[in-house]
Amino acid sequence: MGRQPTPPRPLPPLPPRLRIRQAQGFWARFIGLMGRPDPRAAAARDAGNGASALLIAHCTSVHTCFMRYALDIIYLDAQGRITRQALALAPWRCSRAGPGAAHVLELPAGAITGLQPGMQLQPWPIDAATANARFVRVADPRGAASAPPAAPIATT
Image 1 (cartoon, rainbow, N blue to C red):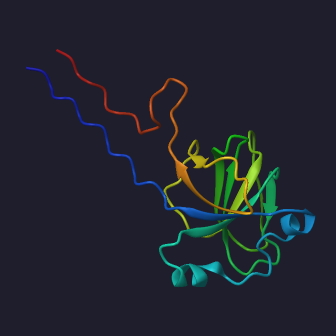
Image 2 (image 1 turned 45 degrees about the vertical axis):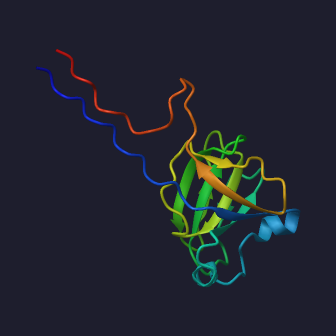
Image 3 (image 1 turned 120 degrees about the horizontal axis):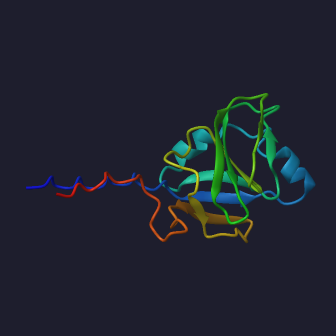
């Protein structure tokens, strides 16, 4: 008699939808979320509508100078996949993207959890000034869905 294979671990639930606004023009990109009230109060008021985020295209570093609250920064590659995250970046700090990043998504700290490098923002690209989007797991190059590795199967 051989050992029974261990079933694969279930994947964590997908994060909720995001309301994404794209920063258009120099000043919108430069100002970002500076001077805005803490959006967590608005998120509590609008519960169920998803978190708000600001997409800054063709950007690989951000600062939180003059911010009144911490931000979660998500760096995306040219295909909208997560390359790196800077979680709860406090006011008066800087963050750089690293290799492969092309865009930045700014959210209030703790607005969204469960994201992992390699997850993709869909729909991509974001075309409208405001869009509803979601991060999804994508298949790896070998065709298997992104998931934690399963335990090896014992044979007898």
